[in-house]
Structures are given as structure tokens and as C-alpha cells.
Figure 1 (cartoon, rainbow, N blue to C red):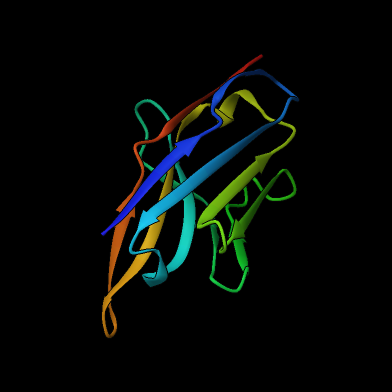
Figure 2: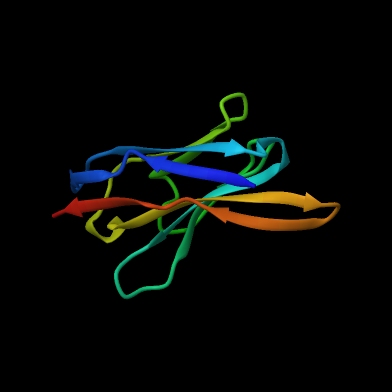
Length: 120
């Protein structure tokens, strides 16, 4: 099993920046891709960014050029640097880890989420 704990959320004005962190513990050697997702009130959870073990990243179009995902495998941590924040970025941000359970069988683990609120 893997446990994920996010931190770094808060209230920021439009145009500001925040850095989210996600610390993993437990069976961390089995972690494959990690990612950030968000869910705004009344909306479905959506992908923000993913980052592979090797550091390859993928971003939602809405955050490209503003958000940067990074990963420190030695610390079992993943980060999301968010710049030029907009009110529409307001959401609960979740960290996800894809964990190899057995051979090609993968399982998703989620953190508890951290609130990001961007005021206009």
C-alpha cells in the first residue's frame, strides 16, 4: 500500500503562485506514474498533470505554460508549481500514484486533497 499526503494549498490572488507537494510513504518502490488532479465544486475530477518515473510530463491544455510538475524519487515526492493562477484554478487538488501491484496489474492511490482558492 501507498499513502499520499498533499500540502501547500491555500488562498492566493489571481496572478499569484503556489507550490503543492505530495509525499508518498509505504510501498514507494512500486510507484509508477504520479499525477495531480483537481475537482471544482459541481464538476468532475480532472487531470492537471502527470509525471512518469523518468520525469516525462503531460499537462492539461488549461494549465500548459503556467503549471510545472516535478518529482524527486529519492524523497518519494511530487510537486506542482502553479504560476499565473486564475480564479478558474480554484479546486481541491489531489495527488495520485499508480502503483504496480503484481506483474502488469496496477492500482491507483489518492491523497486526501488540498484546497486551492484563487481570488479575483
